[in-house]
Image 1 (cartoon, rainbow, N blue to C red):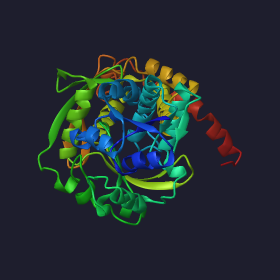
Image 2 (cartoon, rainbow, N blue to C red):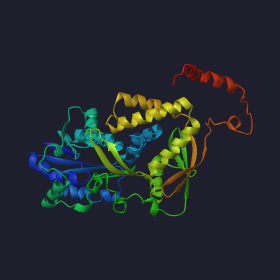
Image 3 (cartoon, rainbow, N blue to C red):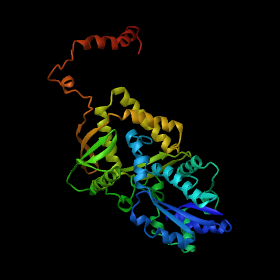
Image 4 (cartoon, rainbow, N blue to C red):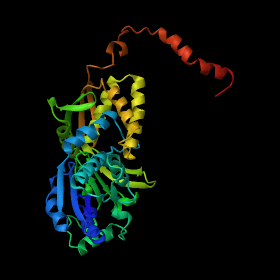
Length: 399
């Protein structure tokens, strides 16, 4: 039996190679590791580690360009968030990795795909709905639902007993997910919302605002139809822009979120997210849309942003409703082109100016210093008609 294992080299997937070989007779383990921007240190030596743990083969794919252009860019355009705050870093990568897992399974003639997600989380659903989308008959093996290991402490001990090398110790074995967009931290002391995060111990992409440098940094982000295409006047790929803004945002204490969220499986969960570059991009995008989009369209798009974010969070990336919403987003973003200047300072993102060839702001009309073709006498009739229902209710003694 051939099994393709979604392999990160972390605690959970590291112990799954020997566990699978112990529990599935004569099975061959083929590992698949996705480079989604987690950094060279995370993937260093991963091939040797997988083979030493019992895998027969490992694929390591660089998915960064595909991830940022096909799976992140549409949601930047949408301004999508979950529960109004979370910038969906973990949810972005799962549909793409699921697709690649199926591709490898088909190439290798594998009978099953295995992932390391727990039965308490969202990622199990994201992976499996993605796998079902590309191969509804593929068998999925989920050790966390069936083995006797009950938690990370026992998983850590299993690794020690089986002489599996790990890059961390018990005291710092937070559950993490890192990609080019974000880094999440869960578990240990963070599980209790009453505990303050130990930021000096856990932050990797940046520093707290208190430790950020004292000098403000100016950046100018250029957008074309809702997608960042330049930084400080220089045309750049979206991947390069995200990476550079991660660096700048991290240095300036930007993009740290401590959040209790509602998981798809019904429980509340507390985590700390680092999303420095994404936070800057979302702020700039929001400012540009305020200049370029007509009022009703802007309000509707803000509603859609929450709906799209919820769909993505809830594993519905591959769905007709998502396709329809993103088609709306594409149409709505046609005029979102221009530049936004921002000041980054100790955790703050301060807008310093917006410019667009598609601006709907008219200085002549809105200025207090000129009429600009706006007849203020017209406002009298408008106010009377708009307030007519209020007048009627007041005369009837209503609320």
